Length: 358
Image (cartoon, one colour):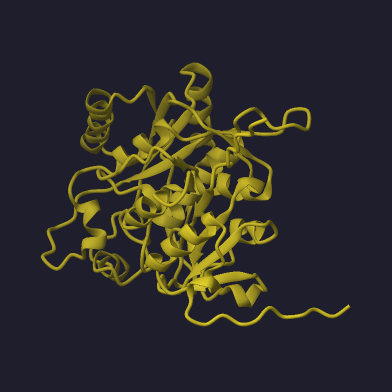
C-alpha cells in the first residue's frame, strides 16, 4: 500500500503595528517588501493593512491574507477563523466632511480600480454627519485618535451591508491637515511616527468589531507641498490625491471572518493553531496578537533591527522568542523552520545534547 504524504500549509503571520514609528513598515507601505520576501518562504502569509497598504502602490500576493488589526487579534485568540474568498463585493463609505472636489477624486479612484483592475465594488454612501476625526499622540510617541460621530459611521456601514450586500467595507474619512507640524515633517523624512495610523486603526476596529466584516481605511487629505528631501519610505503617499487604491485591492480578496459552527470549524477555514511562525518587531511584543500566539506552538521571531517607539521586548513579557537582527535573517530562519531544521545546526559550533534529571 502506498501512502501519499501531503504536508499541511506552512503558515506565517507578519505583524508590524501601526502608529508606533517602526523603522521598517512604519511609513507608506514600506513593509511590503518584507511581506513579498516572506511570502516566498511559506505557503500562507497572514498580515494586516499597515504592512500591505502603499497608497496607490500595492502588490497582490496570491498566498497572502489581508486581515484588519482587530480581526487579527481575535484570530490569534481563537475567536475568529479566516475563510479565504475569490472576491468580495466592496462597499465604500465617504465622510461627509470631505470637500466636493476631494470626494470626486476618491470616487474617480474607486472607478479606476473597477475599470483597470476589475474590482467588484458596490455602491458608495456618504455619512449622514461629519465623522469628526481628531488626532492624538501618547507620551510614548505612538499615535492614536478619536472619532466624534461613531454612530454615523456604523449607520453607513449597516446600510451598505444590508442594502448593497457589501461583503467588505472601505472607509475614507477627512483627516485634519497637519501641514507644517513637527510630527508630519519628521514622518515625511522617515524619522517619526505616522501621525494618522493610530486613528485609522480606531475606525476600522469599530466596524470589524460591530459587523464582523473585513474593513480598511484611507485618509482624505489635501496634497502637500513638494519636498525635495522627502524620504523614499514616505514617498508613496505623495504621488496622487488619494490613498484608496491599495485599500480596495486588499479588501477585494480579504478573508471573511467566521466563528465555530456547532463547535466545529467551517471547511477550508484557517485558525490560530495552524500558524507556524509569527514575525514581529523586537520592541513591539506587547500587542494582543503576539501575546496570544506566544501561548501556542507558533515560533515567535523578534526582529531587533526594526526599532519602534515601544520598549516591549520578548524578555519583558517572558515570551519565548527567537531574536534575530534583520528581516534578511528572518528569511533564513523561516526556510530552516519550514524544513524542520534547528537553526543551531546551521552555526559553526553546536553543543552536546544535555541530560535532564528526574
